[in-house]
Image (cartoon, rainbow over all chains, first blue to last red):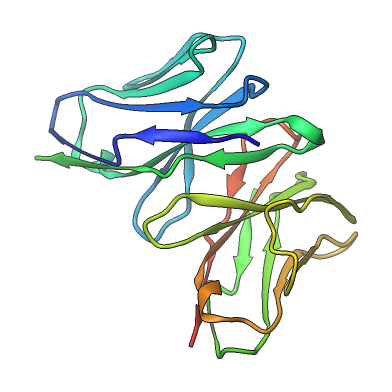
Length: 114
Length: 113
């Protein structure tokens, strides 16, 4: 099955700086890679996603890059703000056997220091 | 368009009791997924259902846990004879198709005393 590794587990940045979170996956058949933000006690919310036929996607201050050859993808947040503080999870779809379960990384706790 | 609904939001059970968690997907969504989240950890897939069918239950413990998504009504995750290790947040998600954005519900936080 799919295995997703996520680094770092915690990340502190000064307000206005950039934050980068990296993930690797094991299943070369995976073709959909979402990123979720989860605030304390709340539900995970999708912030950006990318499919395997695209190398990069950007949405305002957030961007995701995908390297299929190396099987890794990264989340980039620029001009960080205190409200970006949360736990971020990367995930990959394991499309084997007709199921589409999300396999999540263990999360990165991002703290943006004002 | 209401989002994914889950109830109850908090559930307290004593060891040996049963827990029933409900999930109503977003309107128009026929794919439902259940995930479990332990404190300070990521979400772990449990089961994937479409209406009246279990598609993949590879993440669900073989004993005490069951799930259903009937033709009418919400999806239900049932945990029989709960143990302390079942304490976790249980999230369901729904999607319109099999590979696409999964929208998460607010979760049910189960505490087993």
